[in-house]
Amino acid sequence: MNKKLCIAISMVLVLVLLPMAMLSGCGRTDTASATPAPTEQAAPVETPQATPGRQDGERFETTVIVEGMEETVSYEHIRNEALGFEMDYDYEILERRKDADREVFLALGEDPEDPWNYFEIRRTAGDADSVAAGLSTNFSDSYDSVSAAPFTLDGAGACACIDVSGAKDGKAPAGSLLTVYVIPANGSCLVALVRCTFESAGGFGVRANAMLNTLTLIG
Image (cartoon, rainbow, N blue to C red; front, side, top):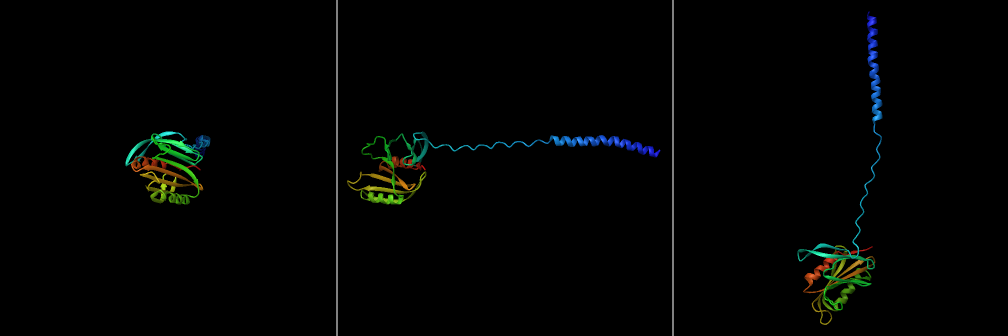
């Protein structure tokens, strides 16, 4: 009786455990097959390219500080490949006259043959220190006060700045002021000269210097 009972219990256990083992195996198979395939890597995000610089003749508005006050100005961008620089100027108060070897900006209403308020930029051979020394010597013949000192323009960096005043009788326009920047430029230099009167120094002179701070070298 006990032997038959044991056989019966064994048969029941076999019948119960076999399906469970089969289900367990199926579960492992399903889990393995459900594993997702490796996904493809996303394409790298393309970095936007830098915005190209302004083109010669492009016009826009910006603000400058004049006598401690913000003032909206209308600028035109110039890009002179031959002389190797670009800069912004206020086309509403200046007339641009471009020559082969220089850029000239006359205050509106000035006599082109004998202007009082203007500035110009030209390129010259020689290192900046030698050119600045030579200009200082030349200016001393016509002006009483000539002083040179290192200066930094916002766009062009380190340069020499020459301040000139005190016109000698008959040798320079009375009451005229000069500020000259000698800017190193790849083995030569740019010379930017601002000329104005005592009366216009706070207006035209300040605006001209603000424009020169936008000057940057090409190359």
